[in-house]
Length: 92
Image 1 (cartoon, rainbow, N blue to C red):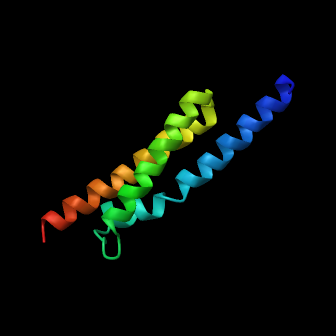
Image 2 (cartoon, rainbow, N blue to C red):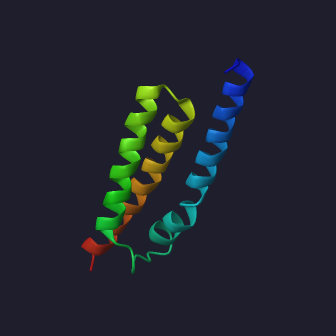
């Protein structure tokens, strides 16, 4: 595969990762700014974090910048949600 094709593949991956991260922003806002956490399953979010961690390792192994960056950012978002829910539920 030529370098231009490889570059476009990474650009598409970065775009997909960016949209995936943007999708978590409303949930982060609900937990951290409005204090709503009902319906959030910590075991489910833990499983999502595990899957993202596996994708991150995969990205490192194949040296894919888009997979690495997308999964680091998504893990950051998931971590914010998990920590926010734990914080809120600790005050109940």
